[in-house]
Structures are given as structure tokens and as C-alpha cells.
Length: 172
Image 1 (cartoon, helix red, strand yellow):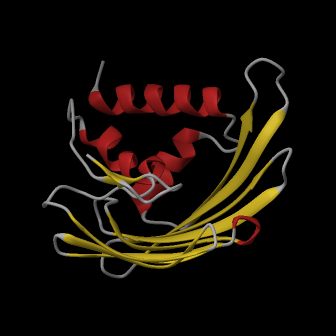
Image 2 (cartoon, rainbow, N blue to C red):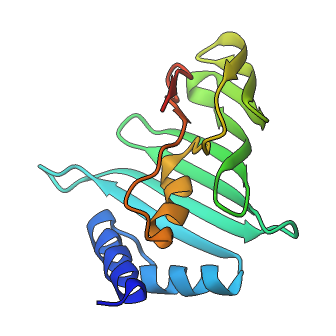
């Protein structure tokens, strides 16, 4: 099976399993053409089938070859909602991001500056001002976004950094 066909099969499988309302094949083609695109997702409780979350993601190409990604989400039954905005490089590695969740009293910004992640704002009502040391590996603050490039790459594995949203602890 060709690499392109394998990726299409994988993306189609992900689309069917995650409840995407737009074809993963169209997503792949739009990415290849550098077009802006919006996707809608629903998460379901595996046991009951009820919807437990919804989100939309808008991906816009930037002149520097990277991407601006805007995410809006809602979770049920607690009806919390929020927004996130990411600036990604051409390999989908996170350069900066903003997270807002009013119900959780969370509003912070993060930025990668070389081998340091700088975070300022409020997390769960507490003021946060952190510097986190990392190495040269990619930062996928939202792995769902960053791993898109990995899926397309054909690589068997990739090491990266990410932060747990609940406490901003780094993982590699």
C-alpha cells in the first residue's frame, strides 16, 4: 500500500472513530493546498452514546508557512466552554498559545522562546508565571494539532514536549 493511501486510510479511520463531521480526506487535501479550513468534532460517552463534548477548529495558513489555529469547545453536562488560539510553525510545533476558560477562572498565554516556555496569566484562579526549560524537540501544546505533521511524515516515532492543561506540568 502506498504511503499516501496509508495516510488516507488512517485519517479516514480517525474521522470515523472520532465523529468528525467533515471528511478527513478533504482535510488532507485542504492542507496540501494551503487553504483555511474549519472542522467540527463531537465526543461521545462510550457506554451511553451521549454527547459529552463538542468543539470546532479553524486552521489558517500564515505567510511564514506556519498556521494559526482557533479552537472553541464545550463540555457536557457541566456546560463549561472555552477558547484556545495557537500559532504553529510549518511542522505544527507550538510557538505560542492562549487559553480561556471563564468557568474555570483560567486565562493564560504561553510562548516558546528557544529552549524555554514562558507562561503568564491565571490558571484555576491562581496567578501563574512560569519558565519551563525544554530541549530542541517540538512542543505540541495540543497534541491533537501537533501530531498531524507526524501522521503525514511516515516516521515510526517522534519525541516531543507537551504540557498538562490542568497544572501546566511538562511531559516528554
